[in-house]
Length: 184
Image 1 (cartoon, one colour):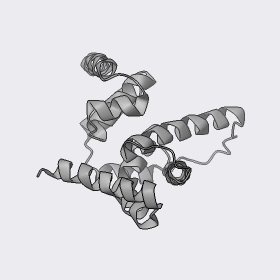
Image 2: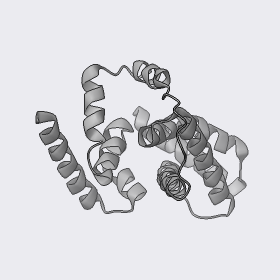
Image 3: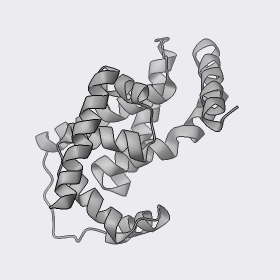
């Protein structure tokens, strides 16, 4: 059995325990399996360690509430990424409705540098990230889900609520645009 298959099988077993018995231990195991991936996904979108931690906590609280309502969950990872996307959108909407005034505090770059070092980022990859952030949101999202979070096309399709074909086409266009921008 491959590692990815065993992970998916384990997720299905834990999800079954969670949805049928509301087993908090199963949720804890799922949390441990996904918290880093969801945090990384959120951090990439918001860029602040504190906001990423807050949003990640909110994602898991909402997922727990969703499961406790007895709603059907086909894929726990799919649920988490959908909730994360919605929480990020809500955060930006809230931020737009209640703008904050910067009191001249410098941004703490050390957290970002530590994060970059932990994931082994190089100057070249940092440039790619800068360029990636210039792509439209839809392109950023499919590239991040596919290559940073290493999700399959069908998982991405479920998360963004599009067909597999649409995800493939969007990913192809996003990579083409990214390559053009890198070439500039």
